[in-house]
Amino acid sequence: MMKVALFSSQNYEKPFFSEALKDHPQIELSYFSESLNEQTTALCQGFDAVCAFVNDTLNKTVLTELAESGIQTLALRCAGFNNVDIKTAQALGIKVVRVPAYSPEAVAEHCIALMLTLSRKTHKAYNRVREDNFDLNGLLGFNLHNKTIGVIGAGKIGQALIAILNGFGANILVYDPNIGEGSYTLSSLDMLLEQSDIISLNCPLSEATHHMINDNAFNKMKPGVMLINTSRGALIDTKACIRALKNSTLGYLGLDVYEQESELFFKNRSDEIIQDDVFSRLVSFPNVLITGHQGFFTQEALEQIANVTLFNLQEALDRRSELTNQVR
Ligand code: NAI
Image (cartoon, rainbow, N blue to C red; front, side, top):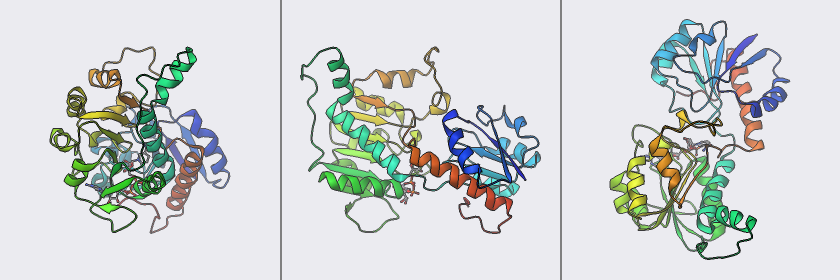
């Protein structure tokens, strides 16, 4: 048997895990709505493995306590692992596994949803029509056809996005140090920043990419550019972003992720006073659209997350020497 403590649990995940568990009778899941951090590691006592999500904290302190509690496997039910101190996990003998691709199309389609909502202002039109206001003033949009769209990071999600954008007839520039030719034009980062009408961030967060979109990057962009970030909040220096919105360099901003999202996202906070003034300022701009990390949130992706997470845990339970989805 393998006893697994699943943190940051949400009700919407449970039916997918219940279904997937039918194929894994030796795995027992306990759901904790708490996120995993220094304050909650004590909950891991008596478990063999931990299952965590994007905003759980897996730093040296937490990992050390997990190892002392006998945890041998950390199963991430996400692709990104920037929240895990991988070196420490390796040194402690904790195997880290992840779901490398649950549905790149889900996130790519969400990028498109943000782009089209911002360009065609459907969120504003929806409210107007409900109030019998059929005035078109202020709703003027622009075509994606023939626009130059810069994709930073063309891995699984970036490639899915490029496939859709080709259908729109956009000119696609790609900056990714690790990919070859394709149905796009390979570009330097500077050229992409200078020439794009829309920029989409689809690379992982790392030391190299932290705040890659800063004052310097905004200074190179076309006035009125649209920026979309569905990857990780800290790719953007949010304060620089607010400056770019105030001086109109940034014409449209679509975010599914935010630097300090772990303090905010995935909970209903409508009865709270939000203490994050930077976030509140962002929300106040008329040309900013923020969703709360829902790019992955489709039925297809949740099914895949549950299936692959349990497959990963089963491989660890079976003591496979090579785990298919291990992070190294
Ligand atoms: P991937 O690993 O398939 O592709 C990432 C690409 O970024 C690779 O081709 C890599 O060469 C490139 N890259 C690395 N460093 C770069 C740099 N400095 N500049 C430009 N490109 C660089 O990852 P995938 O599956 O496409 O996911 C991308 C990111 O999307 C994840 O790291 C994660 O942070 C985020 N994500 C967000 C979700 C959401 O719900 N909003 C859901 C899933 C992933």
